[in-house]
Amino acid sequence: MVEPFERVYTVTDYWDGPREGVAAYGGAPHLYRSVWRRDLDDWDDDRYFLCSITPAHAALAFEDWAIWQRFAEYYRGRQAPVPASLADWGALPEDLPRHRQLRQLLAPILAVARDRCFVARAEFRSLGPPREAGLFVPVLEVRWTCADSLPDDDLPPSPAA
Image (cartoon, rainbow, N blue to C red; front, side):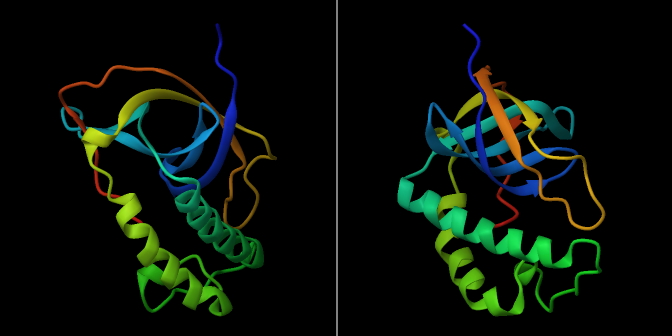
């Protein structure tokens, strides 16, 4: 049986593809983080650690993602200002207080331990137009399939934590 595509709610780290965020797995929100292969010193192309999160935690992640989307839409095709602190990147000035608060609330959620996760293979597909000028905010779906965890798999800390 072919698994259905599910919703990708957030993409909070992107390097040659989604590396971290929140997506549905089996219909429930899960944190996903790309597997880092120590033996290759690189990201695995399509394997991810998945960890379930509560609906309340997912709501915090969705709220912070909405702040990022407003920021990206405002600066689409324009040069975004460099913030004083890297932690403030991705928020308009009026959203900064809540963005900072959400970052503090999300930090323990993003600091997941490997033993709370399982590994799955991801097939992402875009639902939107190709990359436009300015900041890129992908609209994605993902299909998860079973994958093995390998001895050299590493769960790096979240860049957002």
